[in-house]
Amino acid sequence: MTRLLPPDAAGIAEAAALLRAGELVAFPTETVYGLGADATNGKAVAAIFAAKGRPLFNPLIIHYASAEAAFADAMPTPLAVQLAEKFWPGPLTLVLERRGECRIADLASADLPTLAVRVPAHPIALALLRAAAIPLAGPSANRSGRVSPTRAAHVLEELEGRIAAVLDGGDCPIGVESTVLDLTPTPADLNGRFPRLLRPGGVTAEALAPFTGGALVTVGIDGTGGLLGPGMLASHYAPSLPLRLHAHDIGPDEALLAFGPALPGAKLVYQLSATRDLGRAAAHLFEGLRWLDHEAARAGLKGLAAMPIPEEGLGQAINDRLMRAAHLPTIPIFPPPYLA
Ligand code: AMP
Ligand code: MG
Image (cartoon, rainbow, N blue to C red; front, side, top):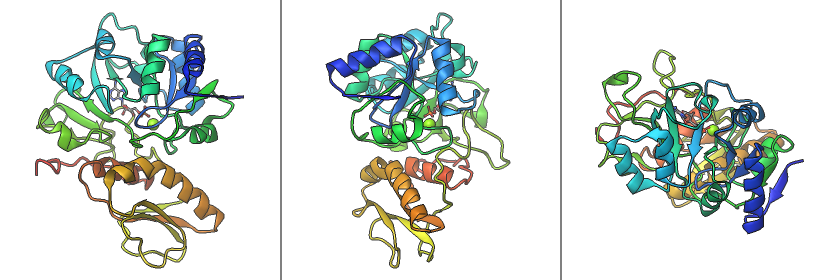
């Protein structure tokens, strides 16, 4: 039985006690729900991989209550310090070199010499991190290969009976995962430059550009099918029905993921944003995919079709997730659109 804990002082204290005892507790962040475990406890970290069915070579993001705590385990570069001041707490993950005295279990970062760290902005996540007083490994709280959860009920759909508790913080305000930026010089000169944008997310490329003019988008798989980074699985956010992108019309057997006025003729529609607001679309993307997939299957439809979304601001993160959901390679874009 997985317990649903309220986001009050007692619920947070209970969640913190479970985590300190090595149990798994899902918690809300501003991006999506994370599946938390004591990142210093190898057995607790192993339980995350087991509960999610996640391949062991896919490293986890470690969550901290402060930049100081994060930089005690991961070595900051000067740019990392600047970015932390500007964007933390917030939806930006930095990949840095592990310190020699790093307390984090090796398994959490898939035995890599690097560590992905972040300070989340959600008040409940921060309260939990302070109460637990340990760094938390926190991948998205879904089964591996499925759509990330943005409310407690989604977590239960995915992991009921497999984890100790879910801290219920309502809907996640941003709705897509954090931006992952690799600031390490390894692997040596991948594409010739660093820092590298490994995953577009809640902090947009436009917001990062003044700090990281040369960031490359290296998400996903390259033109030859080779993986460009650890955990960059092509299919990562998959609904069960096939998804068609850039739809300008709708087939008789398709349900529509709409962005702006819906295409005529669709029998089943999920509207991401009638006014084409990218922030609203991001916040509702995973809920929309989940709902549409479920309802379309129930109605006997055979596929999903998504209307085009502009490749700007949060649209870059949305398109990345849609490409993965459609099993399309997310090929590197160079130069990135904001430098072109
Ligand atoms: P998730 O926790 O499911 O949102 O995924 C976390 C993602 O962060 C992984 O898929 C990796 O792409 C990335 N990541 C975590 N740790 C590292 C690392 N040490 N080096 C590079 N990427 C990482
Ligand atoms: Mg995930």
